[in-house]
Length: 230
Image (cartoon, rainbow, N blue to C red; front, side, top):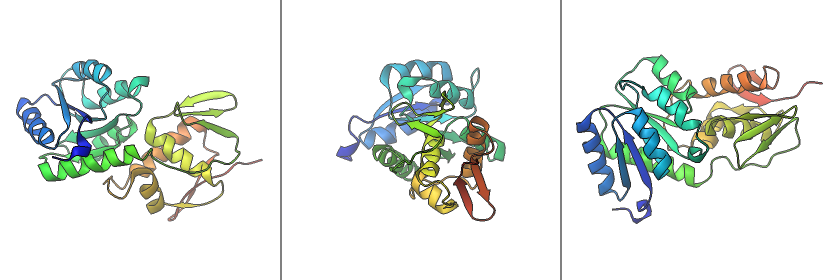
């Protein structure tokens, strides 16, 4: 048992009772405080009561699927710091993209191997503990509020999921600098967290939808930069 894991809370959400028990057993052995839910509605109730550090969320569930559950979890201010990792047996690209758009931090495929799962969870929680991107912010037209995950543009507040906010924060740290894709993945997601190749593209598109097309520039084959036009 890792003593550092004591009191860290994990909520597992899956409609398969065998998977719930299997994952709970392995996570409890590692010293995590584990909670279970077999559908999205109950998951939201438990999450608001317990405020978990990390939520393992199955994509395919009846009544309310994992994508919709993730959207609703992300809307709760009390859960803004919760890490969400999707569990799925599906390999289609649209599932991953939908999960990232909903604000997920990672994507874990079934069948789940306990050692791999524990390693991924610890990496995600370490990243959370570091507080994400640590950069200095210069004066730009877009201001950010670190405590509320909010950007202020033209006196309008725009709320972002955590990873979108950290990506924006990184780009704002050095306007005009081209951040390489590998650099973005390292600073926003961390070297220990495995994400898909399209992760950055999805998050950049979401930033542009909220901020407008003029602020984030693609440097083809290289990366992205923040710039302001006159």
